[in-house]
Image (tube, rainbow, N blue to C red; front, side, top):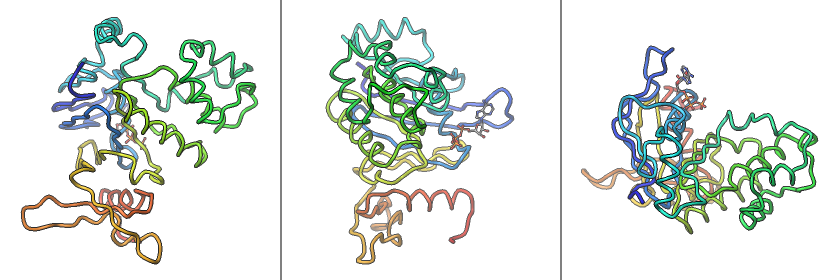
Length: 288
Ligand SMILES: Nc1ncnc2c1ncn2[C@@H]1O[C@H](COP(=O)(O)OP(=O)(O)OP(=O)(O)O)[C@@H](O)[C@H]1O
């Protein structure tokens, strides 16, 4: 098995229709058993990066390896590589993004159990039952009668049913209530701690995430402008007696002349103030 979950060298990517690249000079190493957050303004390049990692776009400039393989290589090659690793039942990448959210089956008049069985619930019984419990899905529901958030929960059970080596999550948690989202994040933490896999998650919702990632990648106009390694670069500070201590959250502290700056994250459970300070800086927005 590859030493890294994902690796990107000197990637520049431009859509045919665009005059400017959507991603430029991207270099990235994602180790196994890690959780990475991708942060940036609308249009920064987060989805493009995740789609390239999933093999949805062909990379012509630069190198991408996921589980040691070019994600654009034929599926048969990926399956053979997985078999060589003894990974019969694990797919290399699972990409859950915007298009996936709009799959047509979720609006049909079909029962949840029937739907889950059609994609292999029996084969992944234990994992399926766990996901059904975590996401509080009722297998007797009928899809066409569900709320958006309930549909999303069923979809997530479907999308996560088969174990993956690298999970690419492109903001698919917006419809979830806070409890379902935090249980999902806990499940992903447990997965990355207990089996060989990693998660890369692009999001605009930062609540409950302060202690979740191992790494944060900040993308601005197609460039990675910051990569924060939690072990090296983050120190947790106590919130002030007034509550959220916004004044220190996301501050960059310098410890000596040549020391690497440390990011202070308040022990309140949100990365929101840090993300706001970055995005304001990216878009030249004064404090409000
Ligand atoms: N299919 C496409 N054709 C041409 N340009 C595209 C296409 N998809 C995205 N882009 C452009 O690439 C850039 C990055 O878009 P991307 O979707 O990766 O941003 P994002 O960071 O995911 O944004 P958001 O937070 O709004 O989802 C944008 O300037 C966008 O206009």
